[in-house]
Length: 67
Image 1 (tube, rainbow, N blue to C red):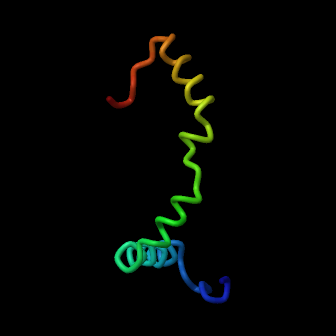
Image 2: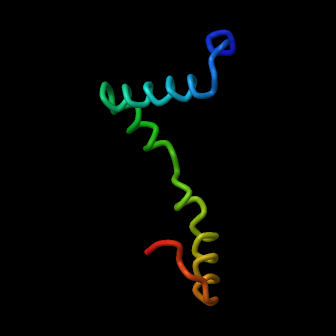
């Protein structure tokens, strides 16, 4: 990979990655769906910690960043 990206800036690489993702969505969603099915979201894997933090923040007077 290093040889293929020699001379590319971070912005160049970012553009290539964004284009690749866009093409994947347009051309073949099955790979994205397969990856989604194999990935456990953080809301599930960290549910206990998220619940604890939510309860803790509810106890103190903290203004929410968004509704």
